[in-house]
Amino acid sequence: MHYTEPIMRPPCEGYSILIEATAGCSHNKCTFCSAYKETCFRIAPMEQIRQDIVEAGRFATFMQTPRYLDATTNYVLSSAGTKHNERVFLLSGDAFAMSFKDLKQIALWIHEYIPSTKVITAFTTVNDIRRKTLEELKELAALGYNDLYVGTETGSPDILAWIKKGHTLQDALEQLHRLENTSIRYSVQYITGLAGSGNGVKNAVESAEFFNQIHPYMIGSSSLTIFPDTELGNAFAHGTFTEASELERIEEMRVLINHIKINTFFSSQHISSMIPVVGLLPNDKERLLSNLDRVIAELKSMKMLPKYERNIV
Ligand code: SF4
Image (cartoon, rainbow, N blue to C red; front, side, top):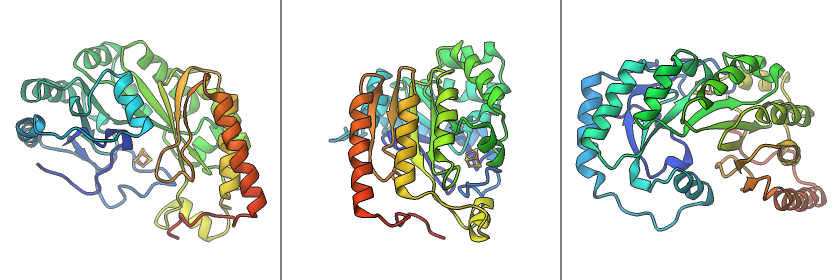
């Protein structure tokens, strides 16, 4: 198998077969992200991808059944009707940037050499979706592409511009609505603390308004980590970005959940999150809000330090 560091995949794809389709990220400009700063974006040679799929296929039947699946992984797998060994995740930062022709060829190889595969998935950006026609998206859906991970990060137009995500809110709405015209499910991402201290509530309200206009099967929430080799890291070092405290981030998450009106799965089980918050909305909303209220009361009574030791700055 060929792998280029860094290798990143969603936590709930922890048991999926990882195939290197690309290295790096085709955008690589987000102000908070240092993931692929040292890796130039490139598409892996198609023959190398084919060889890796053949090799993975030889071992797929020997994959061990995990003894424990966390709540988010369990939801993602069961709602897609897949077992842990029936999913292939294409690396890396936005493998869905590949052309329709290449994605189709990869899917054909996967079904030939790993016939148990039911879902082929990847990280994607709004612009990667925009570059494909509706007919191409539908054909990819028929070939097994599903459960795409869309890095939305926020639904605030100001924060979106400030983090240089490369798309506007309108772009995101248009492209996610196009995806909804196919059978491809998608999840979106929200990062608490991204707007900085004092701005989390506004970000949460605006983001909930955005999420309420789309239909992600899951909203995944992580918590901002400030990396020194980023524009955000520089802003933090120069005092132009003030980090949100843990209490602010939990309050922000509460506002977000409270304002979400769509049916979706909410998960903040990411390693960066201070506490796991997982549930189906709207059914579990009251439970999640009252749990968060208890945490908020506890943090206030503890007079907790302004930040949890997450940053590496
Ligand atoms: S699109 Fe994703 S991987 Fe690429 S720079 Fe932005 S956050 Fe990082």
